[in-house]
Amino acid sequence: MVKDLGQYATRELMNEGYEVIAIIDNHVEMRGKKIEEVSVVGPEKIRYGLDNESTDLILTVMNSKSVFEVLEQVEDIGFKNIGILKPRAGKYGLRILPDSDEIKGEIIWYVKNRKKTQIIPRLEINLIDNCNLNCVGCTHFSSIYGTESILPYAQYEEELRQIRKVGKLVRLRLLGGEPFMVPMLEQYIRAARQIFPETDIEVVTNGLLIEHLDRKLLKVMKDCKVSIVITPYKPTMYIKEKIIERYDRALELVKELVKICDVCHIYDNSGSEPFRILKKRKEEIYFDECPDWYLEDIKALTGIDNMIKRKLN
Ligand code: SF4
Image 1 (tube, protein in one colour):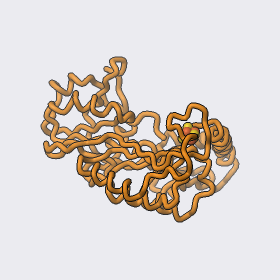
Image 2 (cartoon, helix red, strand yellow):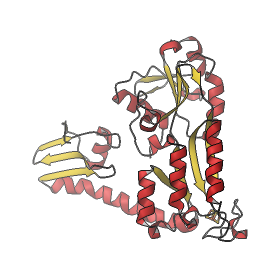
Image 3 (cartoon, rainbow, N blue to C red):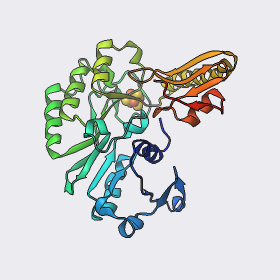
């Protein structure tokens, strides 16, 4: 996951050949700084200093609650297009393609060719009130509900269709209780994707049932591009921290491995196709970049500074 969605978007757009004119930030301490060699300016600068008629504005707001606040500052300025970057773009290092459609491009357009559409920044739906945990202070009051507390599918689908009529939804979160306790969850997921083809959809879980999930459900989630968000509860935090610790240790060992191997190839297997980021043959060392692995990331992973850029895929 990227730490700074704005920086990620800037770098990605530049990599895709777009000119990034300025980065607008409401934080006064950021003014005058540069990110990826692009100046950070305040909102007043775009009002008076840029050619807004021919410039697109892309909002990179992680906190959905701030979307309207930011839109209020910019919507009367006269941009031809104003888009909201889906949070998943930064989370998964996806390509950002403003000229593509909203599904592929990872941007939901609030203003397109000066035409405004109603936007809903975020919607959360409790699919079930019951949970497999019994946390003290659960704000969803899950402990007082039974397993029958499932949102009926017909009602769910109807409500989604009604909401669709209001406008475009940036982010949909399917919650509980524990949503993985819902039988036929795949049906709920398919409906969400069909009704909101462009939306960033997440299932929010405590994570404990993931290892028992049916592969069919996982495949539906993958096909529907629905992500899993694990909320940090005590029982899951321990497991999660252990996995992260082992992962970090394994990454540290990569440096040692590359040093002693005469021939070494490193792939990123997180996408649909493996992507080779490093190729070493004795003294010749080549690298290739993708949105998850830029030169500085590959240097940090391998501990090697003197690599040559080459197409390895
Ligand atoms: S995991 Fe979440 S929903 Fe379940 S009891 Fe705990 S706080 Fe409530």
